[in-house]
Amino acid sequence: MINACYEDAPIAHLEVDDLGIIVHVNNACLELFQSQEKMVGRSVVGLFSEGENGQAQVRRILEQRGGEAVEVAFRRRDGVERRAQVKAWRLRVGDRLQIVVFDVTKHHQQREVQVTEAREAIRARDEFLSVASHELRTPLAALVLQLATLQKLFRSDEASESNTRVLGKIDKAVKSTRRLTTLVDGLLDVSRIATGRLALQTEVCDLALVAEDIVGRTADAARRAGCELEVHVDGPLPGVWDRLRLEQILENLLSNAIKYGAGKPVELCIRKTPAMATITVRDHGMGIPAADLERIFGQFERAVPTRNYGGLGLGLYITRQIVEAHGGTIHAQSEPGAGALFVVELPRRLEFTDSASRVGEFTDNASRVGELSPGSSPGGDELSPGSSPGGDECTDSASRVAELSPGSSPGRAELPARPVAPGGPLAEGNPLRTTGGPPSQDRELQ
Amino acid sequence: MSLSPNVLLVEDDQDVCDAVSEALEDAGFHVNAAANGAVALSALQSSAELPCLVLLDLMMPVMDGEHFLEQARRDPRLSMLPVVLMTADGHATAKATSLGVLAGLKKPVTLEDLLSAVSKHCVFARGSKP
Image (cartoon, rainbow over all chains, first blue to last red):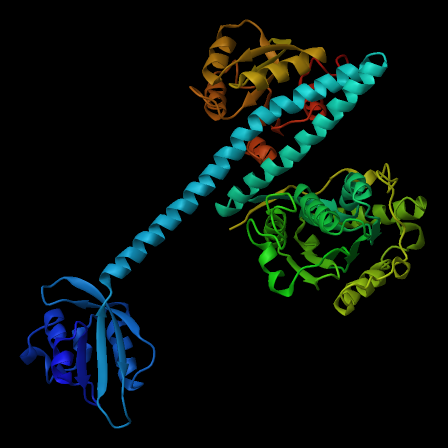
């Protein structure tokens, strides 16, 4: 009875000896391969195609007397090329090896169709993102200009109460168009990254100055969210970077910190070594569960429910792509309830500039500016060029995040920094603002 | 080459065209508009005076911005026309460099950037216009 079941079982089964020679086959096996005479007494390896290391894989399961199933190609008795999953095992030591062969051609074909469909869907999505962001920009361009013209018109008119009210409303509309522009830019960036078209326009620029700019732009949002912005910048900090993309890195990290750490201080530290710049942004908000620390850098990801916090979930994904395109790294440290720390390391790449003397000049001038105008940069008055001000504070606060227990708050008193006023006077009129670097070096992100 | 104090705006989107024209006119420039490269090319070829600057969109029906530039450069009279790009492609500056034009403005362009680019590159604007 059991023997009859085995012989007529719908799964091809073979029994082989220690050398891999076929001793017995069932009926399903005969349907799949050849007549009994052509199989019994021959090596089981010969039933399978040599391509894609098929025979080698079968040999391996023979040698191992079992193990993981392998997927190999074979030619069916009607001559058609098929795919099979082959599994071998022994019931007891000393027994012959039992081999089952599942014809998985249909499954394989379905999987290939699914992969092709998935690839096509991704391509269509990327193309849609690209077209959509392009199309959205056109009406946005008209809107931005019309509002700016209107703003100008009302500003030049005599100040009356109604004028002031209209101007207030236009200002709000302008702000909304800026947000819309940022969102659309995000979509375009994602489509560029997906298609490998994120190009960097690098030049020698000063990260310290870029940071001042962004801190000024973010100060209003920070104040509204009740976040005190503490800034330690070890400037000047020239490097070969894409200025606009640097702005994006800082803007994304700061706005994230303000968004998820509302009501508590946010710290930005920028330190340097001769070869590297390190940006750390720290908040004291809800923190990020350990399981999400890597996931948050993915596309459309976030560690919180989408309903509670707005945004497309693209900021950190884009930030990581930009950082990596610059040859840098980004990572997050956090514990739930203890805030989050984002650390960006960017190579300065000054050795790649074709006029080293110019860079030297740049650095010298920058130092001199610091000496001539004390107080013009946060912490700058206490510094001598080349020293590492705020650096220790950054390191301390950075290392402290790991020690934070949920609910504890690393008191501000431990971070001796001066909060920066919105649009603060950081190195105003610094002649180094001119980006007189060497010619741009474009690099495609692959 | 005889240049007039006009700016030629080549842009297919009517809303953008209106917004840019009005912003420039408010700032004291004269603006002529063309809906695509072909219209602009034929207007330039039939006109006695050339604009002081061409503000060129890239993606347009009939004749796009790149094709317009190719055609204009083949015409000795138009080959030296000052051109500034206005594009929704994020890499406006890189695109401007690769096409060999004066500058690239990224849409949405701010009023300040638009006026400063036009003032900088329109020879008639220098010193006299805003």
